[in-house]
Length: 190
Figure 1: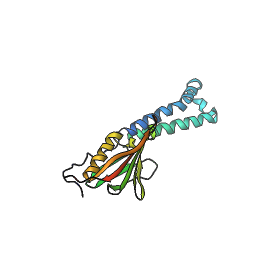
Figure 2: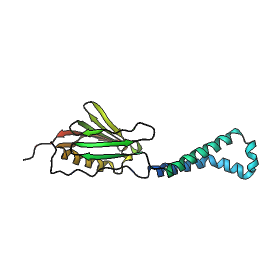
Figure 3: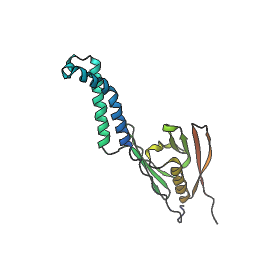
Figure 4: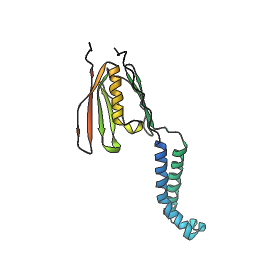
């Protein structure tokens, strides 16, 4: 039974600027194969295009495809990201990715056994497990809050549903950190 006097935490929205960063990186990457093509055009002129070795055609094609992809990323709305919406008994999760199927689980705290956080730089992951297995595995970089803030909101949500989310294990090896959080029913208050 949810605790009625607890307020729900603020929902977590998607990270902003993912398309901007990816688009700029693709445009910078397009400059690498463009350099020999532009240099050849500068010194040999436009007529030399028909006498180019095949390598220059491939470099020009790579430049154009990376450039178009970069501009496309800059002008289109952001698709990649994640949202967490909190409700009285748990939360709903929406994770949108580029090339993999979107995840949209609805999770109740009574079903969750552990939340595992693995911090390894760009490969950070959060894994939510139930008795039946993994409900969701996602990268926190898709959200607009940091891991400590995300875990604080998860703890507040669990408390509101009558559960405690407590850190029960893990390790820290400077470059790799693992946190294991267990969900247990909150002790009744008098």
